[in-house]
Length: 309
Length: 309
Image (cartoon, rainbow over all chains, first blue to last red; front, side, top):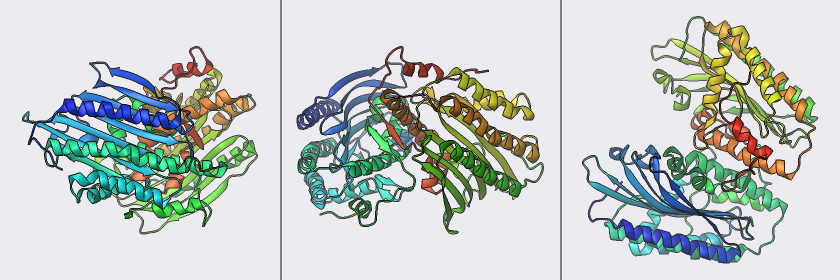
């Protein structure tokens, strides 16, 4: 539970980076899809429990993406909610600021994985008034069909993103990701993982902000490489059905376990921006079991922590 | 927060009633649909965190019901989970038994409402070893299009079910239902409500068990009357799209707020039996707003507490 006041954080630089990251990501995804993102600029009134503003960018009904949401938000509140402060009990109920970019992409083709990426920064004050800040973020991949090539290239990109911060960082963040994206009631991980970090201020502001940029910048090339390999794979009703069933699990994770979602809903955040992570269509069927030996049945083997590199 | 040890509970009589109720309901729904329910008899091992057994009955892909789940379960655990004991802090972590019938019906035709019914009984022991028991249950209706006739007949049935327990009971249980089935992040109720009670032992065991039976028995005729009026109403893509969007809200309620769902998932219950409440297909779309003045736009007017009788 690192926390730091070693050097003063440059929140303006973080904001500039995050706004630019959102633009770069949307431009690249839009080029890959052929359809543009709509932009919804929103502002919460100054007397709302959670003040702030943001830009929610959404692409729905594209050729590549059935639904893609990429949000930037900058919020401030008087009461840090429990979901954000579980590891910082001394900050519970204190005023805070937070900013971040968050995305979830739901591709149409079931051979392309669903993906999530988030980078965020929190600023708060200890009871004595001493400022405190930390970074968080990561990315994780949720395939419907696992291709070992894709899993390895994804984790290699994750490892390379962490490398400038030290060789020990990737294994830590990879394990944290496996632990976090876990559906207890299903006894399975959400997918094949990636990176997750929180409460991060190791080495001071410059080093921590550098890690955030490394992670944020690594996302696009890592994901687009997989999209490029899978987007022309033909699929039919069978793969579509499987994709919708598995998207149901994605919904279960986000609404039951995800700290960011709960943080947003608990703190009075903007519901449509928070729930842009939901899939466009999802399904549930009683005790659905893929046929033994099928490609779909293989997935279960991968929904547990595993060393990919 | 009533709690009672006035007279000794006849758990065997409750179990008999509940098992019979499940059978009667499935028989009637199956006759209305034309398709039979499958029955899945399950048992949790004696060393599981939540021991017990149950019969999950499911009808999927019927003419009337796209998915209908009617479950009976009888469970025992060593640690009453927080979701069951919020109002009984002295019982948190104590051993308990619980049994109940729970159902959620997702009809195919968007003019027929989705419906939920549950009747349950808990037995536990106070720290000194004194036995304590209580009943809970209710039913609530979630229409996609509101017909005032249906809403009035539904609430009249709810009022009549409560009447033998006293004229004051319906208004209390109706209000509790409005309060409980509320999506805070959407600022709307789940539907037009009905009845909800919990921690109920008023008047002793006989009187409380009688209320449970009145509620359990009232469900079928109340719902089937609405099904009869709406099942032949033609619908198209537009109504289907609206139904799928609204089912997304149903998912949000069940996974974010519903105490029974959280109780089950927290206590290590049987996931497939708990999540039989999920719709077969649900959708999300960014900031979806029905066209002003449309039949769909009317729904919002009804998603707040209202006196129907």
